[in-house]
Image 1 (tube, helix red, strand yellow):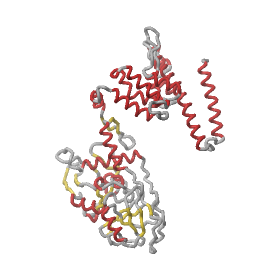
Image 2 (cartoon, one colour; image 1 turned 180 degrees about the vertical axis):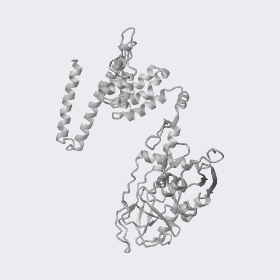
Image 3 (cartoon, rainbow, N blue to C red; image 1 turned 180 degrees about the horizontal axis):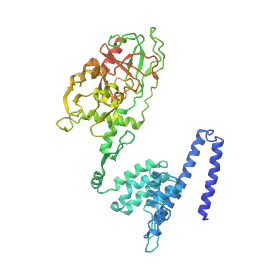
Image 4 (spheres, rainbow, N blue to C red; image 1 turned 90 degrees about the vertical axis):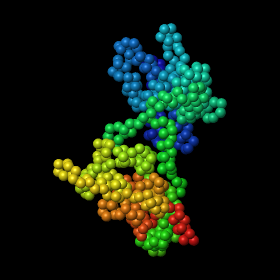
Length: 508
């Protein structure tokens, strides 16, 4: 057996014993803060050393799998279709991880000239040395290679090597700025700076290539969702990120609920003893623990609504933000028309299914059925057209129900509500939809006394999220789900700065 193999087996055995002892005795949980970080740093060094071996071995697999004859190639002799498959099976690592090994190998491997047998320098000799020293791992090498690999031909070998040397120094913590050893993410940023500096042709030639690779595709429906894949131009991604930031920006302090008398801030009857008002507009509603409880309140507990949780993941929030942006764009009037009308989401559903709340609805543009709740959500803020067909499918009659709040009504509702009326939601009015509190199909009018502002997420999930809404004397009231408001009180709600200011004045 080769000495390198013997050494690695011995290291694996020793490390295995150390890991087993640590977990059996729960030694890690007994470490103090300083020792814990020391162990993490030591484990990181071990990982980087092991990655250096894996990268070099992957490079050898690449070389031995590039033989001219099929019989001489390593991968088919081992029953694998590619280098990636062979390394995955040998390491039990993911395809993404092995892709990193392959990319790093192409940047730091010293190949042999086929004609003379002379060993050629690695494309990135500085990063190769840093990898061997354990100063950088695969992530760091790949972070440097990605922006700099294409510049050797345009900027010249000397400039390329200078960037490589400086980035390797940054990885070791001995760069010109005397900063500590750089992380993989910091190396990526530094490499991008070098790429811009060395690119004498500017961005135009690269931009032409980038424009060819841009695109977005909608995949085939799987398990009720449509996968989205593609590449966004930087400015498009930045604009989308700004929309996400605007809609998902968390507030540091949530609105505070203060128990008051039985009238809301506008002098209207709140309809329940111990009602109160929401002040401020933030991420999490909560009770004011310092406020005196109303003597008439029925078991109003302090702190009930503190730290209301939004159970959506970041990705789910961004999905809902994108849905909101698309909805706003569609109704903006700025988009080209389709068939003489604004681009409109058309939802078809059988009247009997909609009334019973069972079955499915269908969307124009996809063959994927959607829940009845999607039809209710879309109809609440749109126009309903009733098409009557006979048993043979002939159209007998067409009727349209005008149920869309007009421009003036939307302005008035915006003035009253300020934004999404669900406490703790900070989606502004311009991004909200108008919800019919009493469904139009049940006789609810398209009137300001029957419309409230809801963001796309709360409107879409209103039947399942536990929030209840009603209009009391022309003003919206909400009742929170039992998990965040066990009292079950109806409370007037608004985020309108003017109305909140009036409430404060009345309490002085």
